[in-house]
Image (cartoon, rainbow, N blue to C red):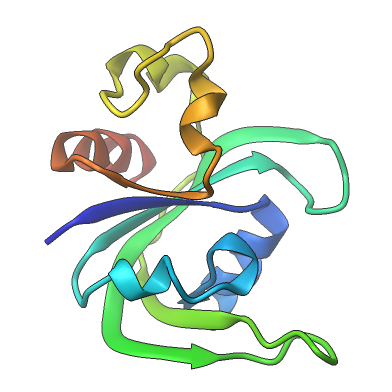
Length: 136
């Protein structure tokens, strides 16, 4: 079992939670291919809305990968992002700010946002369980 964080705006995460799926890196398949059934996934939202600058800076959803299927969804004409099915846990949104010092995947605590720059990252089970304990 492995553990990951995917980065997306909160409004996009909410759509995924409602539909029981996730997307990563603007619908590309590469990150999704790394996931296996049962892997843990946390969603971090730097912004509340994709097309606005309102900060969120929270972990907004958590769950586990449901199966091995990678498929394309239809969101708009010409945009068919790749998706994975997720069993989402009931949880609350949690700010990252008070957690930064405890998270091992954040190397530079002063420039912590840099850790999320690629939109998808593997983390240690310790960090996953710590964040999960705050969300559930």
